[in-house]
Length: 409
Ligand code: HEM
Image (tube, rainbow, N blue to C red; front, side, top):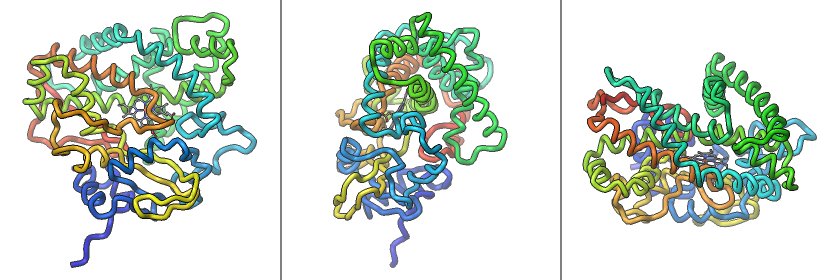
């Protein structure tokens, strides 16, 4: 019998109903049959094996800037929109920059951001408790809308020092910005995104100027202070990368919390273990990141001719690493499709790796580690409102999160 054709990139996104229902049916088959697979539609090599993904994502000699990818690559498309004469670092965030610009901008941003996160726990506790206070439990409620969406937005607003009086606007802009990740947005959603982009550009431009003259206790002031001490980072670069913290951090952390709540409710034995031993919370968050990572894939570009998994790759060809597939590789994880918060630890790749490893990982972990125990403590009888109904997953390519999570308390 002729084997079924290998899936194209379109069949590896939640736009495809089979993938949306259970991505691992497709990914397991692809990993078993062709772990390094050239997809002509994506113009990219798709990698699904843990060992390959781990070593390639950590390889700092590979490129990230899509402008360096061959024209056939999906990563290379849309680059013609970049205005001529504008330095890459003033057109793109660290996500798609290479060294030396990447290191020049990421280093001071990390220094300031991590110092804040290290003392941020009490503030996250306050934000989580306030979100819990607002939930009306007299009827079934959508946890995504009531809790998982606002907590990360309010957390980053606090880090950036957004005034309380502007929090409503800031929440609206953050949600508008997320439409930038949605290739199928409606005209209204596009309008929301464009309005949010303009408003945030104006907001950050003013805030940077303001903090330079009157510093406060926030990340923007930390960064203007580092600029004053000689860090070579321009105001435009700063604004683009502050915006990147919103784009990169909100939806992903929303989905981490939502996916964790759903998994714990579907696996009462695991929830019982966590209730019996609250110290397991860090492990429960890591197991959620392994088992149901919010981001499916990341990418790099070959900076030299090379051989990967027996395939010849030439300079400028692109790679797409399926982090989700790597996290369930049976060669690396025993019983990979079981959700087990006490499994012997093996590092997942949900945050990528190497030079571009997620800068927000400590914040996402902190938020989830605070939010989950407080939610389950506040509502000891928390349960799915419609336990017989299938999960409603969003269709946004390369992300895995719930459209809604209807619960009763
Ligand atoms: C569970 C939540 C999150 C997940 C699963 C996630 C996942 C990722 C992944 C896979 C990458 C690419 C890494 C690579 O290519 O090696 C990344 C990069 C990035 N993330 Fe996150 N992220 C999360 C939360 C956050 C948060 C909270 C922020 C900011 C507040 C953030 C900001 C960024 C930025 C700015 C980058 C680009 C870093 C660089 O290229 O140097 N992320 N993230």
